Amino acid sequence: MSLSTEEMASFEATGYVVKVGLFGVDVIRRVQDEIENLHERMATDPIEEVGVSWEEFGDLNMPNLIRQLMNSELVSLTLNAMLRSDTVLDVIEALIGPDVSLYHSKLLMKAAADGSAIPWHQDYAYWKQETNEPLMVNCMVAIDAADEANGCTQFVAGSHFWGLQEHEREKTSFGVFLPGHYQVRDDATLLEMLPGDAAFFNALVIHGSAPNMSGRSRRINTFAYNVTGNGEGQCREWMRGARH
Ligand SMILES: O=C(O)CCC(=O)C(=O)O
Image (cartoon, rainbow, N blue to C red; front, side, top):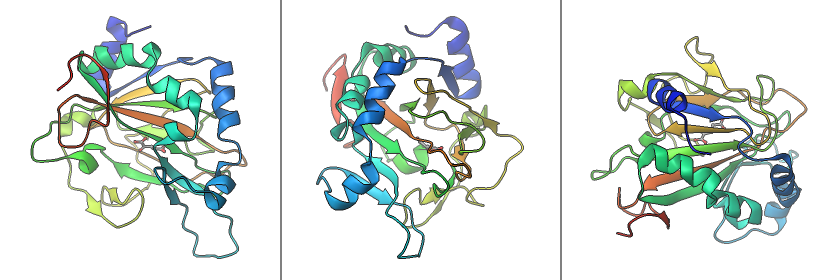
């Protein structure tokens, strides 16, 4: 399953495109099983290559809750298989061409009631180097149902045409953000997803999300891909096409 002409046109016009049901329920159930109790497991038994950013509460009585976990393929065999599957790579190839490398895989855990907002940003604000171009594409897969109440991701359609905006910088997770951090924006579209749905989006489209105000977690995993050779150290693993 790659992209139809209409889906490609939608990606080009808005900066993102959604594939409903890209992964089946059983695949997602396996991921859910593999990441069960992940907050507790990463707190007591960290893995060296897995980078965890915790929710910051300033209250020692609050449990350790993961905000973002980098290299998530190391905590879930199923995520590891998904990121190298034709299901994803055929779409990525349609979007960025035949030379595809993995940039990274990250889990965003947005825990029930306590998962914090993700400020508005363009990914290229994190990734820009002197020598690279904003060619990277993300595949964000819903592990839980994501809706307005649990802080689904929102996109500003067409904002990839605005070029790279000036971002503020702080030394926290998601510390690169547009002025105002997270606030309601009239020009943003809520992207409600069911488990297994996937959104593909480019490196310049503005996105962010509200805090989780519900009793349900909103876990998503984003696989980021790059054109092999685009940037220094930004192609972690070769996936397809020419090897540079
Ligand atoms: O968690 C969110 O809603 C946004 C995630 C995000 O910024 C990303 O995957 O690049």
